[in-house]
Length: 145
Image 1: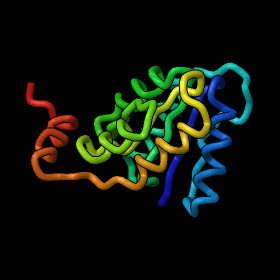
Image 2: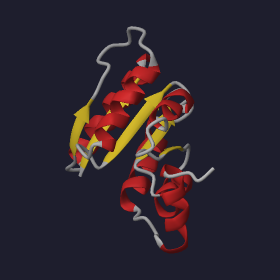
Image 3: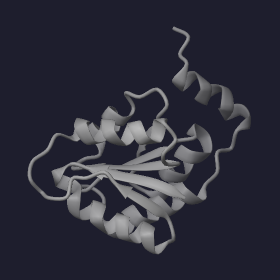
Image 4: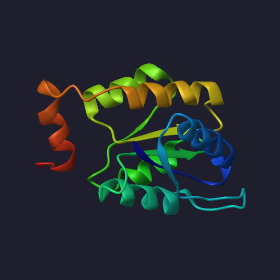
């Protein structure tokens, strides 16, 4: 799979760990930065990640910041992205199965490396269930209010 990964300064170390984990698993990974722990703004990297997911350059995205909250909000500004903030594997699997999430977000200050890897594994190995969920997912990108 083609996967993009991005973070803010608080999650650079987790990003590096997960990038290598994904590469070792045979995925093609686009690291969108940053490369150092110098202060950056998570919206900039969330928007960058959303762009490559939305245009189809990659199949999935991994968004990381200190809590995972800010970057997930930034990614979700793009109507083509369905970014789910998760902290354990069941939520990661359900995000794919029920919501057809195409971006997973995690907080580096809240999620350890082993748990983050388990979440990634669950996310990437789960297919969208379709069926009764399909109409709901369609509404996420095309609201009727």
